[in-house]
Image 1: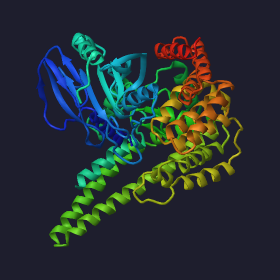
Image 2: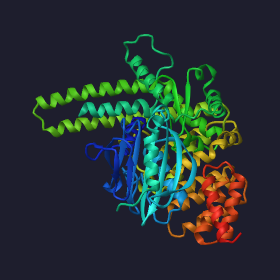
Image 3: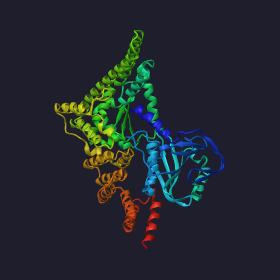
Image 4: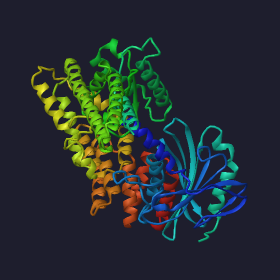
Length: 198
Length: 389
């Protein structure tokens, strides 16, 4: 049972980082997703991430997704999830159009808790913000990975034209969360003030 | 292939099942020392993980109950880790590392029920079941390989080798079930011997069966109903029959420790109930939360989470059921402040602006430092504007 759980843990932890294809370099400047554009102050590595129903999201990272990761989920339809469902008896939280702001926050936190096995996940400062000129929600998070690493992050989300969009930053609290703080803040700010591309 | 099967079986036996020697082996070259080494490494990883609950009072409670049944000398050799995991489980490693899952504490009705499970785990440790299992797996592996060679040299078809594999596996699982039954008896004896009410041991399994029967998932509803030769544990109904028979023959005490158990779990109740919802087995959640209410946990808390399970389940009529539960919870003891936020969200969605405003205000009054206070304040401002306040 416990060995099975260890494998499961490893598998689930990888669900948010598994690459569909190889990484590529994203140069400084505008970086487009299906639904929105973020502005990169410097060069990042961009890795496609296979999510539920084979939708592709992107993770931007400087040092590897385990050390700093900005996940860009865009254009998610009702019924889509942030990570893959591995069996019928392990259903995943899914986006629905009738979700309230707080239920969308819950979609993110429950996915991190269940899918990435972040323990003691706590949200802070859930507040209104803008996402490409639309009403959005922003919040900060702290937690601990199953291997004992303290992590922190931020998220900015919004439903635009019936589609769910999310930017999620997560990094170890020690050193890495602050290492590229300016670059990460610039990504969030560019989306908050940006425009829809799709 | 054989090696892979045996390796899986062996590792599962080591961790999923349980324990071994009571004293650290002096000779590092023995297989027992090897087991200790593996488990020491696993224990270090567990200690560093974010899953261990370090609340000193809860840890003291679990250790006190464990020591009450094992005796102090034996207990001193155990290191107990409470792990935040919403499942009914506990395990014991050969080196004296006992792992107790929060889901077990939440589901146990009393000290006595928890003691039965921990006594069972200690039984594996006392009887060195893991070491025996390890040796059994190795010897099984050896004779299976030998027989397969013989079968190959004798020109027997490849299916013979597969049959040998199957027989080896079946024998191993039967052996494992035997160890489990032995540990059940030890757990019972330790629990009853500490003056706990003897029939509480069978109640552990009765409760678990009832919860599984209420699961949203067919696989969980069917779990443990029929004999499976590859199962590591006996059928729950067989365990119940055996434990009931033991209880009937034992003139035990009547101590249950219900109040102390509830008091120990109570500070973690909200977090653990919230964690239960993550598995999205909402029918099972609703059943469990109803049970918690009848067991003496605060009805306001239980009803709030029953409402949450309805909200997340989203079956027809669940929205109304959720609102009913939240309304009921909001006037009962132990309701968390978020119940007012849940009601406010419902009222806002339904267009009842006055009620929404009032509930949001109540929520913030009860939880002024809430993590979502900025968002809720924005809602309040918006509602005030809409209502012309």
